[in-house]
Image (cartoon, rainbow, N blue to C red; front, side):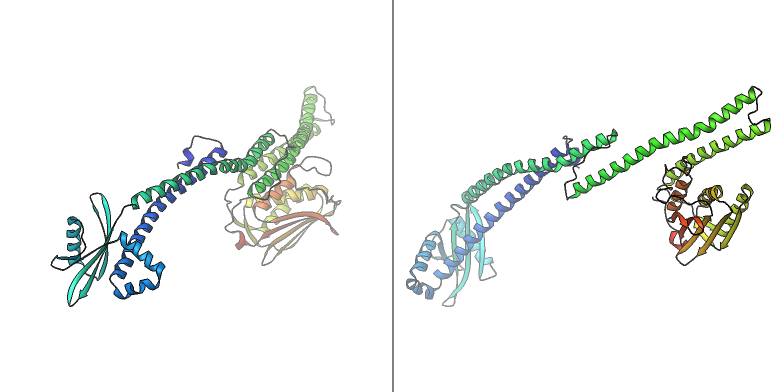
Length: 457
């Protein structure tokens, strides 16, 4: 939450500030840990010294062995000078050593309450820390208490000195680390800034813009994705320009014919010789115009369905093909042959009907004598072929593309609509030449496989 509210808007400064916060946090954690660690270490060393001196001073056998090891003997003597001894009885009588009265009384009370043989203590007297160990021994059947204590003459000063020196060292290291942190933030954001500028140019239709692709990390992958998008947008832009040219030409022709015939009829002239023939021409051109407008609207409708949940329903393919064939038989003098059975599939009934209608309309337009429909069903799915004995198609052309041209060079959306519908149903569609003529193949997966599908493409 704090990072999102930072005033610097550029990513470079946000990264730099984030690194700064991390450095400061780590430095504080290290300092707090170091201070407690130093204090604990020194306390442990003091108690260890007290235990050593207390043990060796109370063990005569060990004292006798010291002269045999001069180094150990000298070390014990040095430790003994910094450690004081106090031996007293349960009645409070001191039989060896001396200590301030307040410390003596405190040691006596704690010795009487002590449950174990040896125990560590720490107290403060007149602002000075005192560390001591009380050991309970037996001497000639009498209980005695042996207290070894040492004043903290340097611990606080030592801890403070070490802490501040380490603090200064960490501060210097933190300041020096800000330089590479700033450099790193700039290096991280540099390709992003370059991509930002490139994307801005691409948004202005400067399709030849070069992106920083020479990277193997995630930013390089992002740049490659943006470059792929640039190429696709470039193709789409060129295709849209061709679309505008083609559609304006294809729409302009029937409009000119309709206006020309209407004006002629208004002047009492019938271009076809009579009113009926001229009216038929106007009606035919109006139908062509209507078909193109309907196709454009349907493409828009299909684009809307992208990402939407489809309303699937059972579709009887055999019944649907039967109805479509009966309707198309009225439009041309060709032989219709239907073979096999497709059974039932799950899908959007209206969309499947439109897809078949578009393919059958093309087949009827180019067929010479026969249109053959083959249906088959397998455990994997449903397959349907629509063949006509017309001229072969150019298989090098992508006739399913949104802006493709037909054989007469006219703009059409029929096959693109077909492919879009089949894709929404997770199916496949292809067009090619066979020994029987031109064939369009449909494939839809099994009913159970698409029951819960969403049109997310």
